[in-house]
Image (cartoon, rainbow, N blue to C red):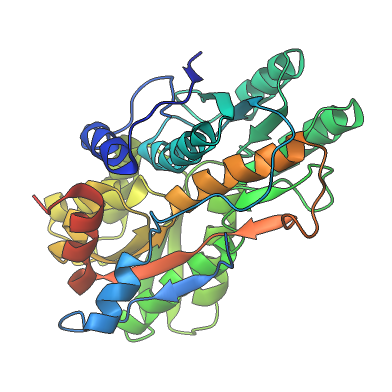
Length: 371
């Protein structure tokens, strides 16, 4: 287990460290490390206008300051666990570290464990939560691996007196006793928006495959549901394959190759997490398929495929804001506050759909260049 203690590095340095790591892709076990949300779109076109460029750059907000809430203690210790080790959660960790740094400037030390397994597992998550419950943490936070399995565990923890929140990409089930959630509250809409863009690109006819992600993960399942409901609106469109890649680029590649072999005239692929657009793009490129790919998030390789026209569009989530807001709300929860005037029950973070003309802007914003 790693403990994240406060440091004096600035956000730009932390970003450089993350980008060096994400260029290498996911690894083994380990971890690095407000305002209204909603979905935005950078419209398709030949080139980004100044307004559109500003919209793309606003997809990830690095400019955050702590609000005027005065914490009751000078030290807090948190525990956060999430679905699986992956660069997406390292981007969340950047926002956490910036909030941690700003608290340190105010004389308040934030320490936290930030860990996940190498592969998504609800059983592993339960084990981690039970272990954390026995330790002396001010707040326990979880990015829910499977809401049907994990939510009852969170209810039991809350009933026993633990202060529990959810964060990142997946909330608990409706009615769960967790105190608050910080993250994407519109995963269904994201899946629907991406699929609508695909349908329009295909002229509202064709055969489509869906790569979901991890079984039971609310964000992945909700996006897939949005994709299915959107396809169902059009009589000349059909989903011919649905596969779970378990958030693995390699498995997404293998499944995409399998689907393309079984359906050589496949027209499109809807990708519901950050890994599968990369696996799908590798397969489409290798096979020479003309399938149109839409998917999620800001993986560097995915953005390069977007720039090169292999991927049609990506829905980029503001992971940095998720991390920053998670720490700030965890402090308030630790002090005994409940949702209300200090923070909402659900803090919604934005998703911005970007296209080929936006790819170089995003690559420069996140990675300092497109190569």
